[in-house]
Image: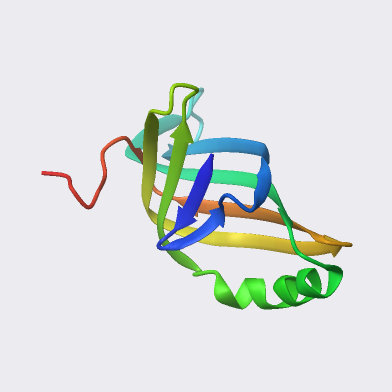
Length: 136
């Protein structure tokens, strides 16, 4: 899996792969509680908030390069933009998914020797199956 936020690749050919990936869709519900009512009322606002979290390991030429990358990385990554996922199947075909309004809610970067370890939590709107830049 390859992952971008705008044109910045979070996961690419230099990473050890994405791990601990999870997706948490949440519906926007309004809860109406009435006085002395046995049941609550629910109003589905018909929009979703998606939360995606994942970890990445990146290999560097040496420990000094890993240290510099760890310090520079948070400032280099866009805070928000279009989130793009690329999936490659064994036969070489690719599939894509997009989140148009995505923002990095939390990021942790650490290092150990020549490896940097990255954890991201990204929130956004609904997941699209059609490229938003080429939608009709």
